[in-house]
Image (cartoon, rainbow, N blue to C red; front, side, top):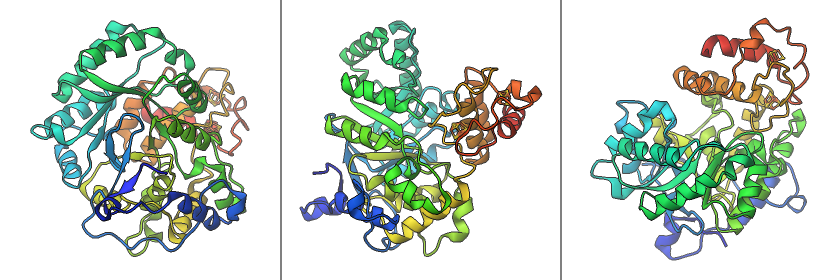
Length: 422
Ligand code: SF4
Ligand code: SF4
C-alpha cells in the first residue's frame, strides 16, 4: 500500500488509484509485456491539461511522517530578487522547499529566508552542507548555523549531507556527533543524504543497511530504469544507467526512509520538446508523471525558475499514472537527447583520463550551461569541482577516446566546457 495520495483521494475518503497498476501500464506503453517487467505499464491517454494548477498530491517521507507536496521547490538556481517565485509556489500549495548552503553562493537560502517571513509555519524546509570525511563537528555546526541565519529561522526540518559520493563521508563519526547535538538543540529534526554521481547506488546501499539516514534525495529519471528505458529506446539501442537504482528506492521505502527524486527531467532540454507538445501536455509533466507513478518515490523536487514554469510543472501534481501520450513524449525526448546527454551518474569513464580530469562532473556542469541555459550557475558549480578540464586544452584526446560506452566524445565536450566555465 502506498503512502502517497492525491488530495482528491483524501477528500473522497477513498484509496488512491493503485500505482502498481500505473507501473504495469507504463511497461506496456514502453513496448514490453506486463508480465516481463516488475512494474511500469500503460493505461490510457494522459490526463487532460489542468486549469488553475496547484498541488493535488502529497507524499509521506517515511518514518519522519512529514507530508510534503509531490512536486516541490528546488532552489539550486534561485537568485537575489526572486522571492516572488517562492511565494508563488507556496500560494499554489507547495510546502517543501529544498535548498543548500552552496546554492548560488548563499543567495538561495537568503531569498528563501526573506520569502518565508510570516510564512515559515506553512513550509517544511530542507537544506544541505557538504561534509567531507574529515570535516569536524564544529565546522559542521558552523555551516548549519550560517544557514539558519540566512534562512531567518531557528530550525530546519530535513538536513542533508550534500552530494555524497563515497562511503568514507558516510562513515565520518563527526557527522553523527554533529547531528545528535543539532537535534538536541532543536536546530534540525531529520537527516539525509543527497546524491547523483557514479557511486550513488553503493552509497545508498550502505546508508540504508546501516540505518544512517531518515531521507534520501536521489537523481532519478526515466533514463535510469532499464525496465522502462531500454524498452522505450530499443529501436535506438540506448542503455539505462544506474540499473540498481529502482531496487534501492524500494529498499529505502520498505525501510521507512523518505525518498525524494531530483533531476527527473534527464537534462531538462525543455525547449527541444515545445514543438512536439500539444494540448497543454508537456514533456516535463510526462517526466514528472513517470517519476510519481513509482510507489517508492514520495515526492520530487525541481528547480523552479519562472512563474509560468511553476504552473506548468504543477499541472502534473497528483499524478499516479502515466499515459500513452506521456510515453511518446519521453520516447521522443530520449531519441533527441539520449546520444548527447551525459548520464553523469554512470561514471563509466572514471579513470580514463591520465591527467585526472573529473569527466562526469565536468559534463554535469556543462549540462547546467547548455541544457539549463544557466551559465552563471554552471560556473559556480564548475568552480567547486575538485579538478577541472584545463588539461583538455592541450591534450590529443586519445586517452579518453572510446571511454564512454554511450558514445559521447569526451574530448570534444570537455575542452569547450573549460573555456566557457573556467
Ligand atoms: S561521459 Fe559517458 S561514461 Fe562518462 S559519465 Fe558521461 S555518459 Fe557516463
Ligand atoms: S581530452 Fe585528454 S585531458 Fe581531457 S579528459 Fe580526455 S584524456 Fe583527459
